[in-house]
Amino acid sequence: MSGITWHYVLKFIITGDAAVGKSSLLIRLTDQRFLANPDPTLGVEFGSKLITIPEEDKIVKLQCWDTAGTESFRSITRSYYRGAAGCLLVYDVTSRKSFTNTRSWLADVREHADPHLTCILVGNKVDLCEGDLNGRRREVPTEEAELWAKEEGLLFVEASAKSGQNVEDAFVRAASDILSKIRRGVFDDDRSPGVKLSKPNGDLALEQGRAKQACCS
Image (tube, rainbow, N blue to C red; front, side, top):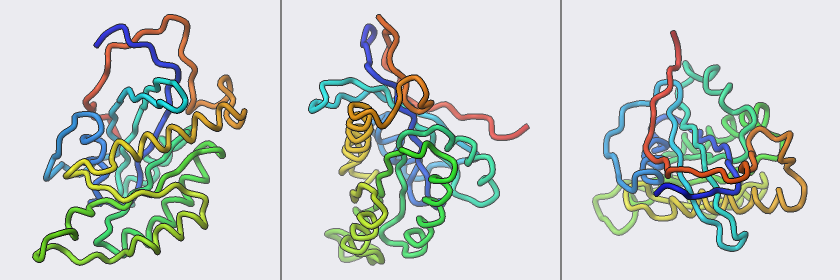
């Protein structure tokens, strides 16, 4: 799909505890498939995707950095927060601990990312506790997560990387909010590293897939 022009490049980070499904969400977005047992992310991994935002009449390129959820890589992953315009803060709806820990992840993001960053709280793995008597018990009620997101000024959605439910919608909603901020002058095209305006006649062969990034020497 060559010759596609995008209007903006938006830098996104995906953060949260290990094993909440961050890598699976990225693969679902970029490849439209589900990877049941992805290898643990070591440092960061990268994926990109073109999406259309109809209400803004814009095409944006998402540059998504999937960060490791273990403490040993935290100093490395923090460096990728810098300048991010969008963030998916992910927890597992069947893990109370992963939801509790989103507070710490959010504090990190707010310390190191763009101060005007748009963050969407994503409750992943809803497929594990819906419509299956043998499924896992939900530990985080929708209403509780939604209330906390509202208190913190976050967008909120529940999703499933396995089924694809609300995965692209999470990115679209966050991107729409960023474009709204650009329109209102909150983000500066020239000074916000997480928001880049397309160069005239800038074309792109649709880039999808993922490339592992070196995390250490």
